[in-house]
Image 1 (spheres, rainbow, N blue to C red):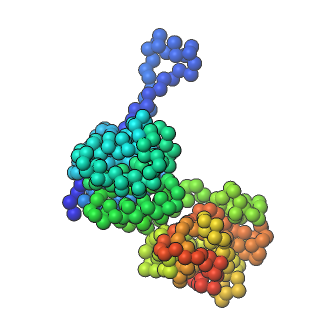
Image 2 (spheres, helix red, strand yellow):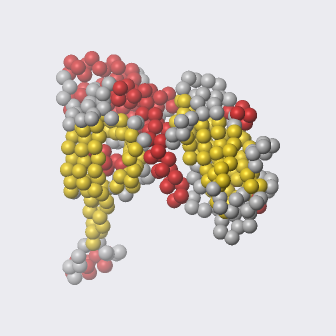
Length: 418
């Protein structure tokens, strides 16, 4: 595959100067004594090596401040690398900030002409594209209004619509353009798919793992300016979210209220006598996945281990999975109680597999909160580990009524010993 973006050992450092002075007196004295000014260096990229092929859809994920936007700015030529080489082929359109490149005193229509001219499109071609751009952005009533009066949502819709219609070779999309109502997000995803199908190349930065999986064929995970992992979207997203979980929730906190699983604090709770590692999602073929087609299987895998010194070996373990829609379709509580499968805690640990053979769920985002306990889950002292508001997945496909309350009879459980 022909490469249209190549980065070879790229570094980017931003010097951030500061003085040692903490007061006006110290500042004056330091100048009289000619003290050196200390320099703090901010690292935006470290030894980045990347090849992006023509027609490739590449997702970029990572925590805030990891260097994702810096990567796009380097590729777009907005900033120069401190060291290394960057080569690109084709016309690049970066969408990195809301309203970037717009003139606030010009109308939406005039800004369309401006953006097209900056990219070298003839005025006649821009005129042909205007109906599609304005219609997609849903700004027919406001297209003659100066953009300084636009809301953030209007800025975003116009910016994305321009980028999707004026035929760049390479499109760079930052996470700020993933905001908007659900219907417009759906339109954006479909437009990105169409752009990719027509041979366009794009890089997509987002915290929304489901959207990344839907539109990208490869994903890179960036941390502290370095590429940590590159590969299939589900595999990289799973590894990234596992590392994020381990950093944010290294140990269960004491469970002090029975409603904490659905309370506003979120996180991880329990006694910690038995702890469960990060939950992983897989599709029917056993591939890591967070975005599922309606009607297809979903499989969850999670390992448990006993805390050092815990006297829990041999006890029966109870497990409940709370499945909830973010669109208010209700909550299902799927429990092992009354089933033939029992987990007797093994000191060596083990693995629990939870399967839903058919996701008869309406398209949208869903969350799963697992609860692990012995005895009664209503007894706070018997709760081992609760992972609340941590795990999510998405369902796509034809619109349908959610059957979330009917998940319980469909589910199957399996226990694997270490």
